[in-house]
Image (cartoon, rainbow, N blue to C red; front, side, top):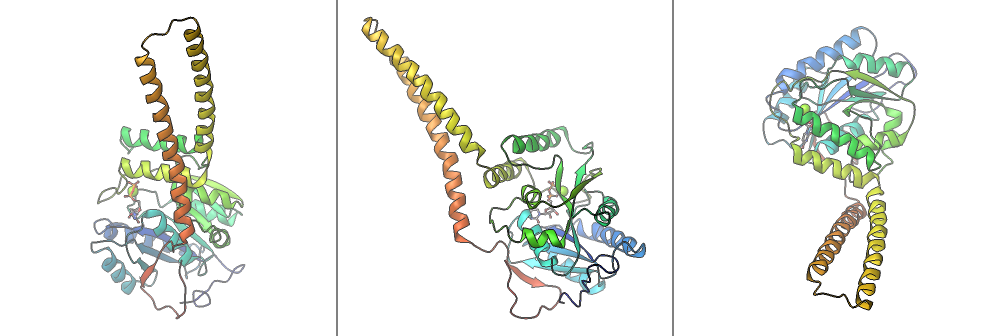
Length: 335
Ligand code: UDP
Ligand code: MG
């Protein structure tokens, strides 16, 4: 398939939509949700909101189970289903990017959504409407989190607050359910970072955007791949790949500690002059512990940025597609 065959015909008729769906070990939930995606796509096509050349693009993120076989079977049965497979598991963000980059020359708009049915598919109608009304990016925002446990809600909300406080601007309560036009995707392709945090990156591309609210449901089957540890890692990656605020905070803190040290030295000198020196073991130990602790934290954070720089300088490909459910012309490059 190439752009012409896929019928990209900007400015004429209804837009071609690609729904991009990352899947990692989702054999339990895919048979349930795939027909739901298809139904939504067909209803949009029937109402002439989108072109019949629209597709549902599954991205297999190196699953170890039957996920890829399922996707291939879907693609054989129904032309609206297509799929690509990553050569190994690269994580949610890279899987979404692989799908978006694959789609960008074949369609006018993409909607990325998780495959577990947690995000209300009906919000897609409103997203397409917003696009037709002139928005290039439409963020899906969770209106409430009733179905999440208190713990998940608390950690997720702290996640957004922490990111914003640390200078990584993200849309509150917006995960990776969003519409992006092909035009914005072509610009996004120019952001070549390997440490990927799409939620922070898409707002940086700019263009007119709007939001659509939806209710978040429970996962229809299977289990979450985002336990607390992974969420913390994502928050940390998000902050350190988008903002240098932590370094600034450390510098400020360094000044503060230096000031305290200065006061401490004065105090020590005065005490010595007055002849009131005692065996100052406690104060010595406290100061050494405190300062060395601070230094280690500071080194760690700086090391994080150095590490990121190291990874970026390698310019490794961000995704590698090993298989597609269709034939591609040769000499195509990915990455
Ligand atoms: N996912 C992925 N690669 C991974 C982990 C997750 O492609 O390494 C996909 C997964 O199949 C799902 C989406 O990312 O479609 C979100 O994952 P999940 O539902 O487990 O996270 P949660 O909604 O609980 O935060
Ligand atoms: Mg989920």
